[in-house]
Image (cartoon, rainbow, N blue to C red):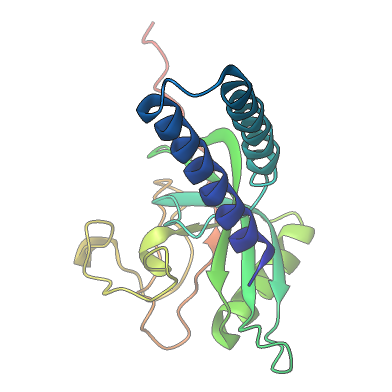
Length: 202
């Protein structure tokens, strides 16, 4: 059982105890005052426990679906460990991009199940970032929150936006990438500069 699962189990038990104690107090309202006092103290203690354990969830990477379009800020590759039964994970720290390639300013950590292809692409993207070339990606290339690859015929990809080479068109600022199932397809591509609003006419 992972640490995150332990935290969730502790929270569940804490709230179940709180609910049970409140139910007892409501059903047996004629209990001696000392028992009621103990119930209040124990309930209060579990509120503290639940609050403390909830803070342990802060900072954990989510397994939710990645943003539709995002900028890769940082990544960490954790390879599988057969002796410990760890299947491995790839942690991506990303920032959502809008349709004009402007970042949201709110970074978030995501966890994607490990596979060799994704690890290689992530490592290559990190090297490009280190060279000063910002890298981005799309949720359509990664699949759902469980990390399974989805069909590329989705709302993010149409035949008009699929290119045979990875990357974007710097003249139009469009973010384009080949399907994930294609040979050599890139999961991370260079981010074109943000599209700026047109200047006011004189």
